[in-house]
Each structure stands twice: as structure tokens, then as C-alpha cells.
Length: 231
Length: 298
Image (cartoon, rainbow over all chains, first blue to last red):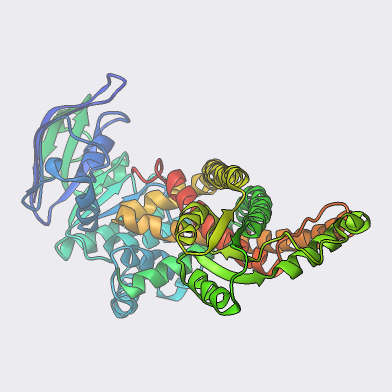
């Protein structure tokens, strides 16, 4: 479970990114985080990843207040959260297999575990046949699937995706969403920031809309626009 | 740290060295440039110090004996002198030997000594060499307490000056080498910073998937060690070749002019290997860590 309690964040330049927001996300939920650019979606993600410090309020992830985490403990938080980015962030000089294995090497997993686990996640994202190829040899959708495999290889309970379909055409985007749905059905909590109204409207998941640093809408099975706007 | 992790560090470190060939070459070049300066300076210091030690060891103490001592007494005095702590060697010079030496020394003017054979005014003496010339004062004191000794003579003033000069030389050169190392670390950390900058993306990805700072540093440290090691090997070879030719040149040019004796090649190279390897690796590691500092905070 993830809980944000009265969280505020102001940047050095004076911009108030988040203004006293509170949000509860249960285990196994699928949440879309929407809102225009600069509304605060990315800030929420960065605070969850502990990339930025929270100014005030509490952020509780799996029962622990991460705002109190020491620097040395941050890596262990990140291992329990998988992340997927809009620009994939794969290492260009490593193969698909190596890119995924890399996330396990970092946790000092044994060679045996790596050899067992990597093929499983590559199978899950349907890239077993391309494990020896390099990122530049793959399509955008395939690259994003590699990054999903990398995010999932350590078996995180939470998957955070920041505009994962932002660089993909609609067809590829749906492949990714199908994958997210499967991952979610297996029990992983998914938080996805997006601008893609088609996806949000068709998936019928929980929608949290952020605007000017505050949560303006939180619907259990929402669309990209609120009901009255849709009319 | 697990063996597996070290293997990963080594694999990644070597891998990135080979992948970023241009930057690696640039870093190695700046290591070589820095080590060349350090190496050449070190060789000069070694040789000056070597010359100074030669001079120091030439400092000898003359122990003049009273006249008319029997051979057995002289022999027992010799034994006694040898047992004084700080004494390296004792050589007896009889009064006849001393006169002959003087004859030889004076050469054309030796006729002045004619007629002295019958009534040789020179005393019997012991020539004492010391283990450590700086102990000459205390050795002289112990020696003068032995009976039947007329006088103990050593170049007190000259010795003190020499000891002071070599001390300043040693401390000063250590300080200069330390400064040179310090400067090199800065130059090299700046070069490595460029390679780190090119790989900041990789570093941030590592941090995102949950790598500890220690883990991110590992491959860079390995890379730094390798850069330093390669740089120091090349520098050692360059400096050794240069020393070989320049010492030959100096020998051929200066012979007869000055009695300069250069350190033997073997000694120079073995201390050079040690110094440059240690300094090279140190520069590589510290340079890597310094340049990583900024990028690891993700």
C-alpha cells in the first residue's frame, strides 16, 4: 500500500509542484495519474522513487515512511519499485538479455538466479527470441517491453510508469497496456502517468487527476475527462 | 563484497575501457604526462641522493695512535675499534704505509719528504668507516675513550653541512613529488570526468534499478586502476629508455671532467616501477572517485 499524507513540494526556483496532497493506493490497484505537463505527476513519481526530498508530509510505502529514509537505504526502496520511462532508458551497448540481467547484477543476485529469472521475464514480455539483439535493432514497442522486463525482473510489488506510451504508436501502446494489465492481474500495483486519453478511457481504471499541484479528481473507474466535461 | 560482484566490476571496468577507446586513450595520455614529470624528477632526485650518499660514505674517521705501541696492542686496539657500535670497517695504516701514501700523493713534490724514512714523524693510524655518517660524533666519543689513542679526526663541519644538505634535498624532493601527485590527480580527474559525463545516463539507470553508490563506483574504480596501471607501464618503459641513453651520453661526455657516478640502471628501474605503479594506480582511483562525486547523486 502506498499512502501520501499532506505532501508538499516546492522547488528551489519557487515553483510549488505539490500543495498538500493526500492519496491512498491499495495493493494491486491500477491507477492512472493524469494532468497537463507541469501539474505535478512527475513530482509524485520522483518523490516515490526518492529522487527528490519531500518538503512536508509523509509518504508511506509498504508500511515505511520513506521521507525518513537515509541515503544509503534508497537503493533498497528502489529495488521494491520497478520503473518504466517514456524514453526506455536502455543501455545501448548491452544486449536485451544483458540489459535485463543488469538490474539483477546491481542487487548482487547470484549467477544462478539471474540465469533462471531473466529468461522468465523475457518470456513474459515475449522477447525470448530477441535476447541477443541490441536496443537499436528493436522497434520502440520492443524496447519498451525490454524496459518492462527490466523493471519486473526483481519481482517488485509496485510498478511505476512515467508516460510509457508517449513515444509509441497506438498499436504498440496497446501491446504495452496489455502487458501492464497482465502484470497487474498477477498482483503488482501499477501507477502510470499518462497523457493518452484513449488508453485511459478504454482501460476503465482508477483515475487521479492532478492540476497545479493538487488532486482535482479521483474516480474509481474514470475516463480522461470528468463526467460533466464529457457531456 | 561477493566474489561475483568483484567479477562484475572487473568485467564492466574492462568493458567500458574498451568501449570508450578515445576517452581511455585521453585519460592514459594524461596519466603518462603526469607520471613522466614525476618519473623524471624522481630519477634526478635518486641520482643526486645517490651522489650525496656516496659522499657521505666517503667520510672517514682517522684514529691516530700514540708512538711506539707493540703489534699485539695495535691488533687488540683494532679489535676494540671494530666492536664500537656504528663502525662499519677498520683498516690499519702503519706509519710506513702513511709515508708511502703521502709520497704518492705529493708526486713531483715528494722530494720534500726525502730523508724522513729514517725518522718517520707520521703516526700509526686506523682508518674507520662508519655505518651511518650522522653518528660520527658519538662514535668519535666512544673511540676516544680507548686507551693509547692520540687523536680522533673527522671532518666535523663538512660532515654536518653535507648531512644538512642531503636532508633538505630529501625532504624537499618528497614535498615536490607530493605536489606533483596532487596536481596529476586533478588533471586526471578532469579527464575522467569527461568519460563519466558521457556515461551519466548509465549511472542514472544503475541508480534507478537500485544500485548502491558503492556498486556504481566499483567498475569506475577498476577502470581507474587499469588506466593508471597502463599509464605507469608505458611511462616506466619511456623513462627507462631515456635513462639508458642519457646515462650513456653523460658517461661519454663527462668522463674525466667530473667524477659523476650515475645510479645503475637496474636500481633505478626497480624503484621507478614501484613508485610509478603505486602513484599511477592511486591517481586512477582518486581521479575516478573525484569525478564520480557529482553524478552519483541521483
